[in-house]
Length: 492
Image (cartoon, rainbow, N blue to C red; front, side, top):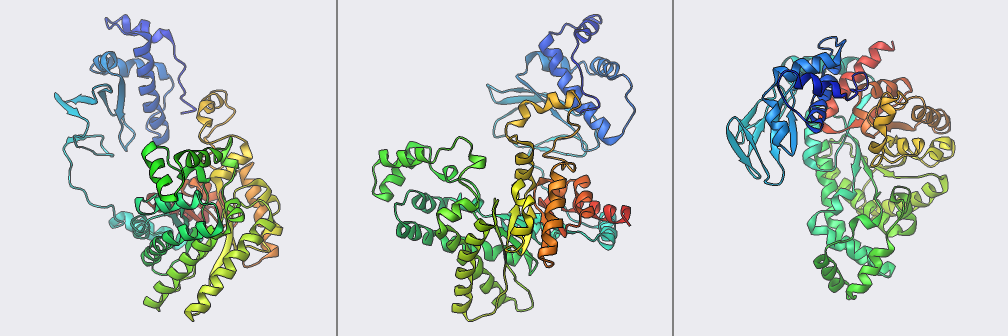
């Protein structure tokens, strides 16, 4: 949207009013938003050269007079765009009444509609769909891509369903499994809250023991879905306050389970508050404070791997345990010791042979700058570029939207650094980490698991600096495969 960012002008109101259509400034601004979307897609798809955006706006405004009543009456105008980049259908949405009208029919909250993302067509009711598959010409192009690319493509997946879909789309492993998502399931959140509100190690261990079978089952299902391909499991990362109840009924239920007063539970919840949670008590800091969490997760990972390996002797199940948010080698060394002692005890007790790896996410600038030290304890690095971008730029992804548009308007930024990797700053940290880490540990394998793993220009950069794999969401896997092939050919 940068090249065609529109400067609102009252001239549009005057020009439209001059042809007999009365609109307010608010209505004109809403149409401007609609046209910005159109121009953005026009630019992305290289449909036509737009030399005078306002002329196009005025022409489209006049050609689409049916939009005017929507702008006058609606709380929101929702544009249903098309995959081909052409203007879509504006819907009049009355938010208070939770309804909209289309083709003379009124739709209410709870009614089903189906949208064709390619054409922009809207259909009444739920149309039966089939899962996307790689076949025909698409399959042929993907086969060519796999022939030329050297970069592996993994997926970010937390459920067997996502993992299975990613495998169907060509993923060669899981680069990031976020275990915290598993704790939010209804059948285990109560036990995790008990752990948080426990007073002693023994109480925490007892609560975690309730979660262990669920975690083990989750990991077994992921190993089954990946059929012997690599699975990287990130240990608990978010701060504990994200798991505590906020509703009065849930707080009372937790108090009863803990044998504590409601007031005591509320005080515990209040004590977990942090002014800057993103840089607070999370990641490996949780495992340093409460090593019993890392012990439970290690047991689940190893027991699951042993069970699946026994069932499938032709597979190589080799868990990759990833410790998040490390900034100091002694942190990693401490947590790794807990993991290794627990894992080795489980393997010995089972009387089997099982290999596993312990690595870390590089998502703090200090970790990248001291990668030579961290590589002495890590079997692999995985760049968590979401947090690495936040900490390098010094702004929060959740709050940056308040000012980034001004940066685009004033040509300070050309792209959203959370969507397209900042190769100059964040990229330099990644290069530094690789150059420092590889000589110390020649067997170190390196990947990326931030959102950038599915962006073509970011994938090309990852190829250039020597990463072994990129990891992205399941439906971006084909994009990453193609981008990796293009990068390999371009850099021959």
